[in-house]
Each structure stands twice: as structure tokens, then as C-alpha cells.
Length: 307
Ligand code: AMP
Image (cartoon, rainbow, N blue to C red; front, side, top):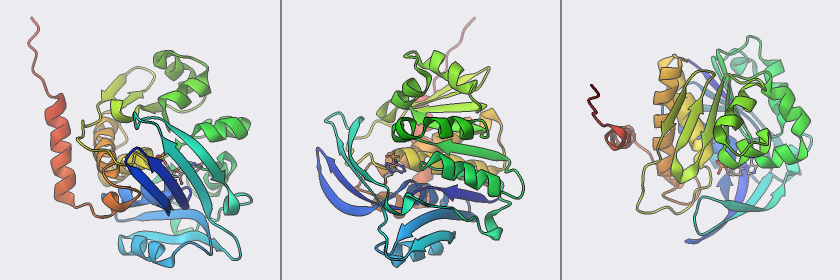
């Protein structure tokens, strides 16, 4: 199967209670692409960078089987820049700065090689760019997943509502689900958001795991309790990359298989937070991933006999 990932490729400056990192590589497409490449060998990226973005980063993705043919490099312009500071709980953060730069007037071009993929993962970026990509697909993908954040709810809510009508699976965090729905109860929020377009809603709750809803069912996956968390940046994107990678590798979009997908996504996200930036996700091996998935199974398995 094949997957197209759309999102930002960025420079991030981060501050956590454990340290600081200045202008390291980040961006939603970077994390999602890296994570998905652990499962699928046919991943394509559509994104935009300035001439300050290192070519080696794109070459590294190519070595992992991720095609960057759809990554446009804009001469004389700067890459997207984001800066954030985490609170002591490491679960909440403040955005200190968002510089759209190349993203400001980005018109995505989906290469022919990626216009008939099976899975489309619309990572966090301008909702109108996400819509533009959907419109460029020659055949409708089997599954369209979308991730977004409060920033776009603040500055482009109408466009976000338009694109929500076209997708199958939405992934957002609990705070964003509350903002989008205007409901405090996540159950009520889920009902409202499902009526906006998607058939499946996944609510990420950081160190408290993830909830998944469709019209009839709900599923909860915990996050793995970790001894050390250095930097939660990209955990949500890595989660999405693990999920779509698993769906791509198994070619099964049933709710039951999505449950397995969010366990794979959670396992990958648990690695992401162990080091700053993309470092930990870049060095992952298959046995390490399988080991961690096993820990998730052990963490949640219980036998109860009800008579
Ligand atoms: P996450 O921690 O999973 O929410 O993702 C963090 C990544 O998202 C960082 O690497 C940022 O570069 C990127 N990012 C931050 N703000 C935005 C935004 N408004 N649109 C797209 N990507 C963003």
C-alpha cells in the first residue's frame, strides 16, 4: 500500500524543564514521515521548505524510502519556524512564536507518483492547503486522516470546517476537541465533532493516552508510563505516523484494526519523547518497536470472569 503525508518541515526552538534546543529540525510532516517509514515502504511527502533547510535531512528521508519529490524548496525564503515552552507537567505547552514564512503562500503540488495513494495523512498545517491536496488526488484514497491544532482553529476556523467534511479520521488533543466543539465533556465533544464530517475521532491526551470514537463505539489506549520524558514535541505527529503506517502495512481500515493502529502509534510516540526533536524516532529498530508494543499489551491485559 502507499501513503501520502502532507505537513510542515520546520525549525523548532524548544524549552522543557530538562533543557533547551535551538532551531532543531521538526515539523509535522517530518515526524509523521519518519514514523510511518517504520511500517510502510511507499511513503510520499508534500511540504515546503526555504533554502535554509538542510538537504541532508531530505536525503536521510529518501534513504528510509520516503519520497521527497513533493517537497518544494523556495529560493530566498525561510522555512516554517515554531517555538514552544513546556510547563512542568510536560503535558501542556505555550507556543511562543509561529513564523509561517514559506507556508504563507504555499500552493502544494502533488506529484503524479503520489496522486493515487491508498492513505492520505493530512498533517498539521493550513486547512486550505489540506483541502487543496484532497482536490488534487486522482482517485479518492481509501482513508483520509487529518491532524490540526488550536492555532488553525483561531486563524482559519471556516476553512477547517470545510476540510473536516471531506475526511474520515480526525486526530486532535483534548484541549483542541473542547475548543472545536465548545463542550467540556469529551463524550459530548466527540458527538459534536463526528457530526462535522469525520467517521472516527481520536483524542490524544498526552501522558494520559488516547481515546477513539466512532458513532457506536469508544476505545481507550493508555500511554506507557515512562521514567524519563525529555521533549514531548512531535509526539502527536509520531502517533499519527505510527497509526497510518500500521493501517498502510495491514491494508485494513476496520475500527478493530484502528485500535491496533493507535497502540502502534502510542508505542512510537513513547519513543519520541525520550530525546529532543526527531533523534529517537530516527534511530528506531523493528525489534525495539515490537518490544514496546508488547509492553502496551502487558500493561492493559486483564482477565475478569463475570458470571
Ligand atoms: P506535536 O508536538 O505533535 O503537536 O507537533 C509539533 C510539531 O508541529 C513541531 O515540530 C512544529 O514545527 C509543528 N508545528 C507547530 N505549530 C504548527 C502549526 N501551526 N502548523 C503546522 N505545524 C506546526
